[in-house]
Length: 409
Image (cartoon, rainbow, N blue to C red; front, side, top):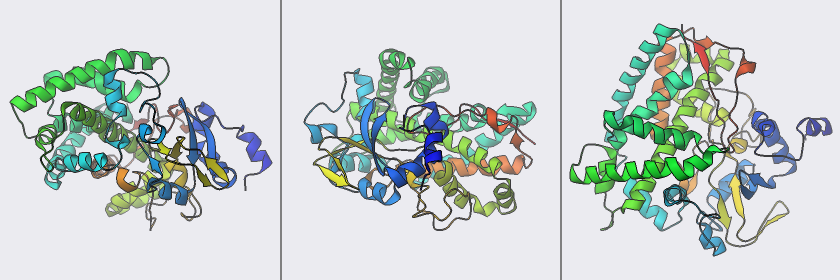
């Protein structure tokens, strides 16, 4: 039970978009689970009902009474306010589709993400991490996020899309817009300048791949066929946007959060250095403990649904807070303890059900390689600033840091 003193300290009622909530989210999660397991509030601009208990989140992610397509539930527009077509394509990606359209798109994309494709990238990622560490070691103290965590998935997404080196400046501008452009006043520039430019860039890239196919995942997406159907151009553009956000942004933050979490738990860090074979279990515990993705996309109620005495009306948006579920004491023993040998560990860091993250194997692989090589080459790695100086980004639905200054050694 959260005491009155704790409640006052947490400054209730909750403002989910505030710096106060971002900095103390895990304390707020405890209050939500105990006092308001179905919490009605606003996340960004969306009026939504939020679930925080593990069992409720798992059930919701598989519940046919909730759909991702807003039109199906409300009869209104899929997107509640006007936006340029390029932004609509990002908002109407595979993760906002329901069956059978979702299955058709996912089956087509699966053909591009073969085990051979991932194994091929593994060797490239390993070589890239060593190149980046060579540069970082010459400097000594770096922002790990900018110098190491970010370039890895950028290079991976470049190779997946088959983007030539000379086109990377334009492509990186688009990546930056997708990563940082949807908060504050920058959203106006993102909507009406950055996203249309990125959309045009991707369409030209698709045209080149059709004329001159290469051995990359974008070419495989273009060529993929399921029962005589292929992705049309808008679906291809939407899929590229989704792969950038899911396969790039998540990995940057997962590597960053992983390094920080290990540094904050030196006994676990020492255990991992002594037993490097625990890396897979360690990555899973990082996903549970401080996973970058704290919530899923909203789904909408097809009918009135009552849960824990709260009626969620037909058409209302609902979001499961994965970060809260991953700290639910009803499921995880000592949930606030970081334990790289935790077993079982049925976390929801990559979601669950039909919308479980398609890029999860790639993100896990990149993070595992990045952490293994960093710890092997810098066994005396340490923070370069006082922990109090680290700043979380105010990004609803995420747990991400602006920078992570470290000293290699």
